[in-house]
Image (cartoon, rainbow, N blue to C red; front, side, top):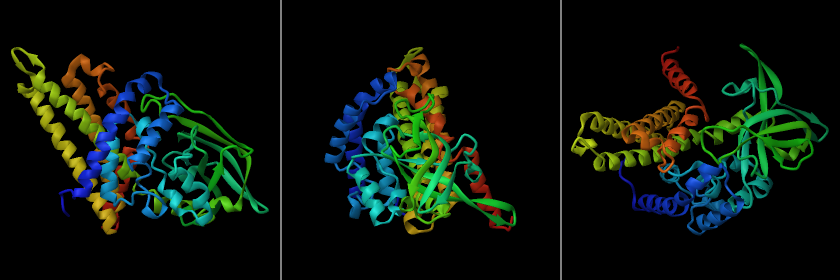
Length: 387
């Protein structure tokens, strides 16, 4: 594994960072204070992102993306992750890789408009009674002639208000296993405006202001069989095949925010004076900086190794879980310590630290809680010895 970056990767980092600092940072405070991201601002930044070659850069070249390898993609995600989440996710959109699982007709109908910036996708898995245990979902789909009829509720569905369609996972049957009955899951494309499909406002939350969530309700919502993504009853296989690297994406955006917070802490420790010297000279502060830098480096190395192994075809679930777990917990630590170093000023919204601190909280919950990541890691360890 080569720890150095190629010239192309350095260019990706420099270009993305310059875009974030020039086009996204200036709008952060307004989004944070209003909790809103106006559509005209989205379109303005979106056009600039497309011109810079940064829009839908996670997609393969053959469908109009940048065709980045996994490490290059994660370096790009890290730089975008420095900014307010709503700004970078909505204005510099990265369509879900699961859209690549669609057939040719589905790609043309759903994937390509997302790449062109005409609409956005959203993924609907979580329910009020089914979070980490997705097999416990109650929302269902039943065949009826040449259609499927969907019923149930999904919640915590990110940016569903903007999305033109949802990729919805529904319990579509049941199979018997040695451990008892197990639900079978099927994924469907559901267009906004389909009768029986309602998008309602979600919850106000402490993290990622401007990045909305919604409640999706399905009441005898009828969709054609052509809207099945992948195979019937194979929804989990589709998700596992195409969404695995999402944990690495979360890890990378966390690294970007942690690095930004550390940068503020270092600068403040060097310039702030107390008792006749810079506070960075005091061991209580200098040791914090050392620990922050060390933990951040450890998280970055775990993430880069997982990215390298992903492209080598040797990555394991534990590799990705370790990266996600470490990066999200390091972000929380770095954000907290950066505020501590700043004292009272760290809690003022003139600086991004209080936002980074708030935003860090959700990272240990979505895309698999820290407890689920530890379960995946320990399960892999035990399986190796027959446990």
